[in-house]
Image (cartoon, rainbow, N blue to C red; front, side):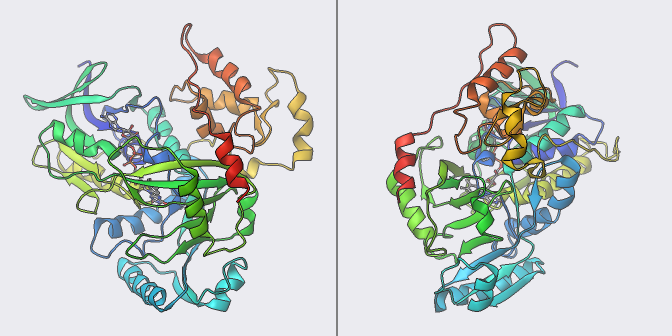
Length: 481
Ligand SMILES: Cc1cc2nc3c(=O)[nH]c(=O)nc-3n(C[C@H](O)[C@H](O)[C@H](O)COP(=O)(O)OP(=O)(O)OC[C@H]3O[C@@H](n4cnc5c(N)ncnc54)[C@H](O)[C@@H]3O)c2cc1C
């Protein structure tokens, strides 16, 4: 029947995308409804990208359970689905007796969660590992299971693979109503009406509002902002691990971490907000976050900062994830997924898939044993600038032509990103897939070129969506700090 699906997933962040990927292995019709113009536009595009070791989330919580399981799935997923992931380890730095007590608590909590690679390091051992760490450090908790990955690249890999294997992904499709109709659930979007046996709520910051549409008013999202600074590619070279501060009652501290593309990430802070779209940044807040980060690495400087951004955590009032069946038959939650939600997503998706099989919605017979996805671009593709310099002047139409100088993105890579299973129409969507515009000039050089490539792929009359401009004066002030 037209517009009838076995399962409808609401939201295409890392959760919705990981679940779509899981479900694409089964012979059923699956639909993902996403209100934004692309997948991974919510918290999934704006977080620290840490695959947490699993020692922070309290033992006995869902966060504790899923973070360790999710962590251990990333290596094979990244190999199969072609997104960058590195298990680089992490340090939680201590500077006083209180921190040392907390570090010992984290060690025991981690062991209880099943984390194996935990060690307490002395001040000297910390500085041997990370020579730029503050010499006042008294010790640290080291975890060799912590990893880094790019959250939006992972979500795109999940969603794209699902779409290549029969899942329908509808972007620009905000869900505005869910009703019971006979044996089905009726899901209304701004554009259409669909019928389904099961709905999975993976709507992030709006998961409480989506649940309330069907009368499930069991939790509230209390949004919490986190701001970041990004230093240009190369700045990550000075560090080999993720450097955390010891959590206190005031917050988890600010981290310093290399990214999989060798940028350096500094952040986040934690600010409660009533406004779920409040992603603005101010010089004062970024400056104070930078000063906090300097406690870990006093020599840190912002001369190569290229970008700032904000992500908003979908923290539930229970402070834990909300996962699984509800009072409404056929309505499932993957809600209140704040940190470590990126880490946990593949394991949560696996369990929701199992519930759908147990409830007779998914058959349980896998149709294809496994999928492999070709990466669009990997860090190992990067070459010394001298080797690619001449390719910048190649003529348009030459697949080897360098379109984005900073990140060495070739015409063939942009064409690849544009020809995959999810249709895209924005400069940011190309940037998340092919990295054009991620570099030091933040797209000043390549944006008009990328715009042309996208325009060629669009239907007549359809316009390329342009990104919001960053405040150059704010960046200039930050570089002088
Ligand atoms: C500052 C910060 C730092 C973090 N750091 C880490 C970290 O280092 N490691 C880690 O593991 N986790 C981290 N997290 C948590 C992680 O980012 C989230 O847990 C994860 O991205 C949540 O994914 P999601 O799919 O649930 O939500 P989202 O990515 O927000 O996706 C929800 C989607 O639902 C869509 N949607 C909403 N309402 C509707 C509707 N009515 N109809 C259709 N679609 C709708 C939205 O547009 C959105 O795309 C961090 C989060 C933040 C904010």
